[in-house]
Amino acid sequence: MKKFGGPGRMKQSCLLRQCTAPVLPHTAVCLLCGEAGKEDTVEGEEEKFGLSLMECTICNEIVHPGCLKMGKAEGVINAEIPNCWECPRCTQEGRTSKDSGEGPGRRRTDNGEEGASLGSGWKLTEEPPLPPPPPRRKGPLPAGPPPEDVPGPPKRKERESGNEPPTPKKKKPKPPLASAEGPAVPSPSPQREKLERFKRMCQLLERVPDTSSSSSDSDSDSDSSGTSLSEDEAPGEARNGRRPARGSSGEKENRGGRRAVRPGSGGPLLSWPLGPAPPPRPPQLERHVVRPPPRSPEPDTLPLAAGSDHPLPRAAWLRVFQHLGPRELCVCMRVCRTWSRWCYDKRLWPRMDLSRRKSLTPPMLSGVVRRQPRALDLSWTGVSKKQLMWLLNRLQGLQELVLSGCSWLSVSALGSAPLPALRLLDLRWIEDVKDSQLRELLLPPPDTKPGQTESRGRLQGVAELRLAGLELTDASLRLLLRHAPQLSALDLSHCAHVGDPSVHLLTAPTSPLRETLVHLNLAGCHRLTDHCLPLFRRCPRLRRLDLRSCRQLSPEACARLAAAGPPGPFRCPEEKLLLKDS
Figure (cartoon, rainbow, N blue to C red):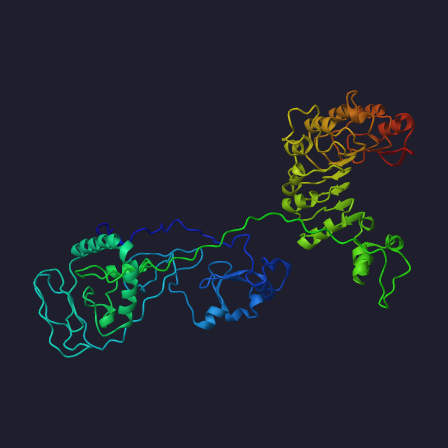
């Protein structure tokens, strides 16, 4: 409020409540090509700029500068806000921001300074602009408003419409009705102006339901004519050559996106254009997953250009294709459409290796699903949780899954994906995997019905589990014995918490792994001592025992274990590596 030293404007946001580093949302895509920002895939500065998403502060369009086929110098880049510019199209058309302080991520500093441009405030709705005023004649402007009770002399001796003498002014503060030949009337005091504006708004709200259409018609008629004024229009407006003073109440009303209120008028407003009603939105159709039609059966023969078929059938061609590698198969798929369909046969793709890739694109994921491999290697890739869940839900025949080196955020998708045919799971060197994370993978799903007699875990059918480099304790091994009883190969190498008690758990009489373990890797477990070596004799099917890099194990004790062995002796091709021929 003005009496407290403020600018007299309402509903202004706090200057401190603004984002200090505004960025584009992660779902933003280019308006022209529909793709996200790809500046990380190139090295050059110009190429990075051409593939990054830029938002225009004028038209609010988000595009790749490379899609516009225009150079960097043709747009005005905002150095304060990332991914923000004035696009070359708006620059060429001469469109500029009305307020240099406005833009995405910035707020207007409404401090009530004089000289602010008309209509520079935020607009919430689009409304038709006011018609431009006719050119006014040059003349001296009034120095100041006269007192309310004393009628002042006319400020302009000649009017645009003629040279008729001005009509006398009443002594009452209420302004008289004006005509095109009438003199300019001084505006009343601010208190009376506020009171009159409030009365006019109350009268307007009562008349809006009945006179909305007629008022809009009269407004259009009055705007088109520049020679006469209605009886309700006050002097000093733009129609008779004057603009309202800056900072006045009319300008404040106009800043909110509505027509200016005429201060000093005795009657109601000329009109109150509510604007045309927005067109009704089309009904949003519910989005459902539509299953594609079944594909036509693959041809059994290869059609030739002459019109006949090749003598070799499809089965013979597949036997030939089975001797080719992935690269050769991709070359064969470019020969013809028939070979392309034949080369998608899942018998030709038993294993797919996508390891060491920085990112996985949607075409790569769809290609994996279409080939239906039995083994999939995603080690040390940037696969996300959403991508992995999408893959696992569509690879029901997957038997081997390698996720070593991935993040736990993506690997956690295993906790909600069905893996009925999984036999090998590689989770080596995943960061931040402890007992709580492994418990999510081993325990049965939480939606198990209470009436079921048995609750099977997600890894019940897994035969080989690789957990090297994880921070596992004996609590995780107890869960492993309970929910993965069919393990024949277990890799616990370089697990810092594995010691002699862990070996006792694995070889205890109640352990199901005592009779099933064939390969056991404990390399790099520095807590193992010579006291745990006799415990391995409890595993009759053990064929490979890796104890390399165990610093507290002596070579002599390992040699004695190799000589005695479980049912038969072991051979030691390397120190602390025990192998037994099957």
